Length: 280
Image 1: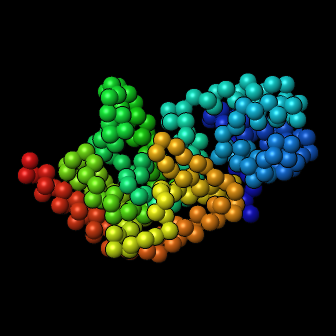
Image 2 (image 1 turned 45 degrees about the vertical axis):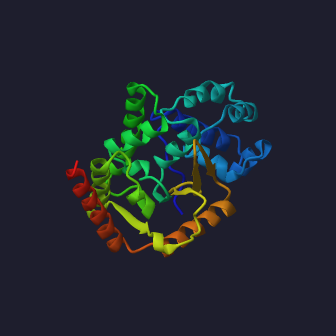
Image 3 (image 1 turned 180 degrees about the horizontal axis):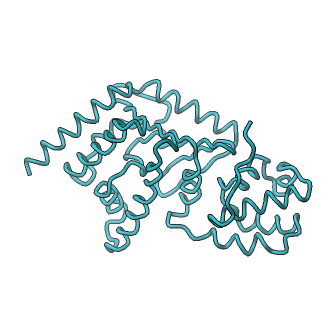
């Protein structure tokens, strides 16, 4: 089993806190479970903090300073974690996503953020905030496209997405934007960078009708599940809960069409959008 990932403390505030937490805990002769117990946190959660997967909260920082005799180190540095370019409900999930070794996602309504084009993302954010000034939309689009740079690495994270057929059929941003968005997804599949399957309408009822689901696996920390909602989200680390959602994703995949058939469908729908765009 691989040992803990060595963090570069200079790379980010979370890396700094994680590396220092691990150092001080080991210096104090405490296990991860020992440190977590007074805070009612699991040992696996402490491990996720140390590896930089989870974000330290201020109340946790205060307790760590007290238990480890850190003279306010964690409180002073925890404040730097509060700033994020992402909405509060998604910030921690985005940070975890950036460290994931593998991501599996079921998308019921929209092309996932990591796969969106600029035109598609702009249409999504404009629909969310119809009266926002253009500079606000520009910032949101920029953050989403920057996040998508995760896929610039040729191998990690492994990304396996299951798209509900409604994702293909809902015209977001108009026919031209939809054609470009679907062709972008198809291109990533053709480059063998991602795996995509489509859950067709013909599948009927399925295990994930309640909403979007993202599963993240890490080299040095337990897996996480993220449930997506309207302006809200839940990041879950309880092993039993995560295992249940892993089964949910497996059941969705079992009802989806094959990757090859899915690619053919995506390309066909993109072509339909091309023809529609040419009529206007």
